Amino acid sequence: MNAIKRLMSALFAIIFRSRDAQSRDVHDKVQLWEGGPYWATTNIGAEKPSDSGFYFWWGDTIGYKRENDAWVASDGSSSNFAFGSAVTPTYKKNLDALQGEGWVTADGILAPEHDVAHVKWGGGWRLPTKEELSDLTKNCDWAWGTLNGMNGYTICGRGAYASSSIFLPAAGGGRRSSAEESGERGRYWSSSTKSSNTYGWHITFDQGRPLLSERDRFNGHTIRPVLG
Image 1 (cartoon, helix red, strand yellow):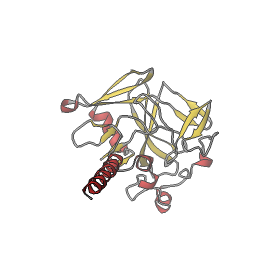
Image 2 (tube, one colour):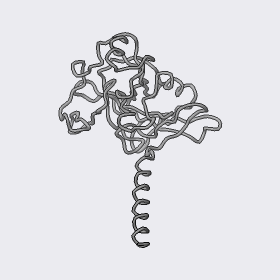
Image 3 (cartoon, helix red, strand yellow):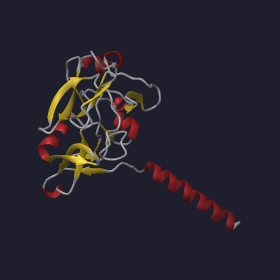
């Protein structure tokens, strides 16, 4: 009887350890300034910091990767995708329409069910807001360089956070069936929309300084999630 109890106890311990391991966040993250969010060290769909990962239209939760000069859906639902207005339900909708259909919250940011970082990574992961991307340019030092053969920016914190950094690859973007500017320019979506009926906010950069600007929501951009 005691042997059975010990066996059952050991089995329960294995089950609970397995559940605990599954519940722990497996994505590396760093904080770059006091009070700021934690930034993931990789893009969504990337295995390494220098990898581009998947590309998304604004509000997309599937993501697309480049294979054999074509866009392939990360879930296998499409093997010849083209970024464009016809396949982007968030396009041509103003803030009121987006809120009415549940795409965005009252604050004008993507709702959790349309935030791919939350959908794919779970927990508190989400897209950065426009303000957080702006803070990334103000609170950190940016240095253009190459990591594993990919151009991009190493972004370092300051002061007590000087040892913390992330690398944003210049992954380019997707437009219709083409991939553009890989290795030359980075384009990363925020969760924030403009009140007009076409644009989402994103950060873009080349070897010049990073810039916050609006972009048509049907363009394919990469995403670097934040936590907290």
